[in-house]
Image (cartoon, rainbow, N blue to C red; front, side):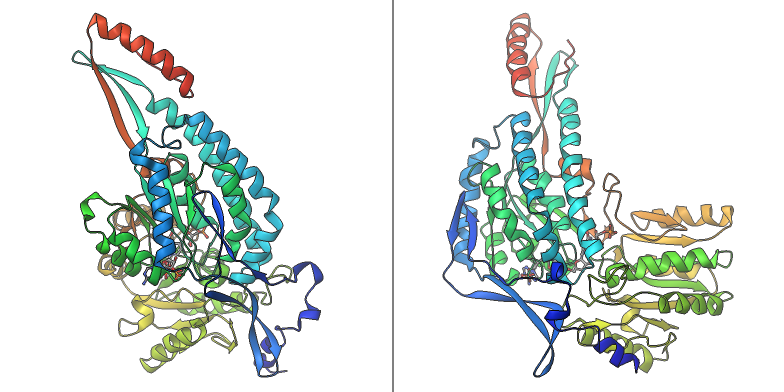
Length: 540
Ligand SMILES: NC(=O)C1=CN([C@@H]2O[C@H](COP(=O)(O)OP(=O)(O)OC[C@H]3O[C@@H](n4cnc5c(N)ncnc54)[C@H](OP(=O)(O)O)[C@@H]3O)[C@@H](O)[C@H]2O)C=CC1
Ligand SMILES: O=C(O)[C@H](O)COP(=O)(O)O
């Protein structure tokens, strides 16, 4: 059987899919605005899975459901609801005690967990992520919420501290900012969106939440949980194409925070729509072209294992993926041989295949785009060095290792966001450093070396060019308590469990002159405060 026939045979008839992984079509007609589940009777967007099914005309993406293709009108209704619920900081939610807000969030998590199996199945079918990774995505998100609750208790303790200086005593508070527009990318449709949505909600803001088009149904089972856990207008959904429904929202000037994870092009465009950009807070996690640097002293087995994980987990569809590898020319041949052998051993198949590494890619246009990148590299002097590299059947693309890449090729700078590994040889370590200096991105690098001095010498330049340097390890976001950010076009603001709480709040002061009369007044305020907040540490 040819390799292509083998790939073809991965796509099976529905009846051959194990029963527990089959999916029933889900046609969503509800959306959540102002605490009401509204019924949609307008145009819908059909959702096709990257998992293809043999049909009369060959392999076809399977229809798995549909959702409301909302328009600007519904987006504006959602904005009105979020504004009313915020009510210039005087609404029920922004004035609610932290302890009570936490109770609402705990109720939400409880209800969210009840939907675990369905949400995981929807991640699998909507974006083709393996069952194991989809399960991880769900569980990691729940853990993120629980860590956020712990961090919030901690931050409230710190922020309600009283401080005294020069005859003035001040109570510091973490206050909400206003209306937040939350948008996320397709590759972690649940987790990425929730890492801004949850901290934004819990800090007392009100939310407009626009799910990504590949990964919209994933959120449907959670709408009721939002509705039942938070006061009306705190969480409002915006459905429809991002390009149609969000620019108008920004143009109203009423969005106080843009929380966006996705491509920098879209983020910058949305920011520019805001008429008073200086009043907009942007919390952005954007694109990246993370490099691995394999030095002459590297343990090549470790470098290969980590580069494979880094480049090909979820088929390379991660912002944190390693998207180019610089290898010292003296070890390039051996590295490429081991890398090719490693890739050949990867298990490919449908998301439910046990131990599967490679699955269909999510975006319909991606196989053609990756072919274009590979063809362009070949036309400019590179080769695909691994067996079957780039072989494509429908939505499945077998990883291609492309070598030697140079600055004339798309793969040199473009973020391929898929299973193609560009490798570039270097002679002097100054070359990968210069690559990073010239890059518009600055998220992460991975350095592979066994020489302590060499490693130490490389950490300093790179840590000033990117936001995370990994030593003998792949690039990755987690654990989520670590700061996650980037330089240049890769990010604005920092997300970690703790940093996100700061990103969606403002540290305000209540300052009082220290007279005897005011001391008495303050003591009374403190007693009141004690009953409203989790704890108070004051000194005077
Ligand atoms: N730094 C990070 O943490 C991460 C960054 N990313 C980056 O995200 C990208 C991949 O995700 P992808 O989903 O393709 O990102 P996009 O930027 O295309 O989409 C993100 C969101 O923006 C919306 N959108 C798309 N086009 C427009 C537009 N013209 N105007 C307004 N809104 C728009 C989308 O809506 P719709 O889907 O309806 O078009 C979606 O909700 C990569 O660049 C990747 O590096 C991905 C993961 C994490
Ligand atoms: O790359 C991404 O899209 C996410 O931020 C992810 O994280 P990961 O490194 O944990 O997969």
